[in-house]
Image (cartoon, rainbow, N blue to C red; front, top):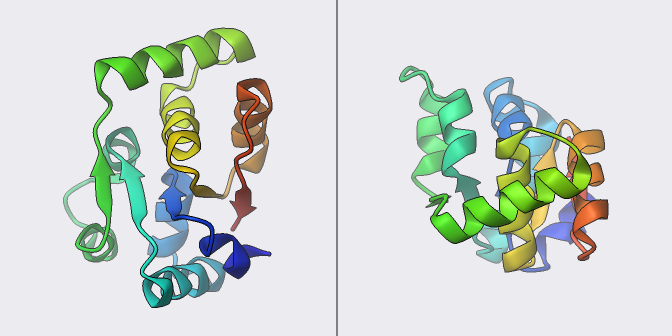
Length: 132
């Protein structure tokens, strides 16, 4: 299922996906290579980058060179906040991942599918979630 998911539109990476990349998880790198082959856009929300960046990760730096970093503007922040209220959760980073991926039609790569799936269910839009 994972490699086929890349063919949709693109990928949005959450914090767990970047951690998986740093840990050299084969599942992440297989999907990454498939995305590159298909020239699928890969997005890292800025809030996700803030959660993982410590200034010393050559792996994350390498990924950044091929990704779009998505800023959390006022409109997206409000949508994320509304999603948090509707889902009765509080992780703005996860909410920004879901809101952005839904807007682009991306597949979300995550190592925490339960939290992401809960937000997707409340959002009510089809968003594919692939667990690493």
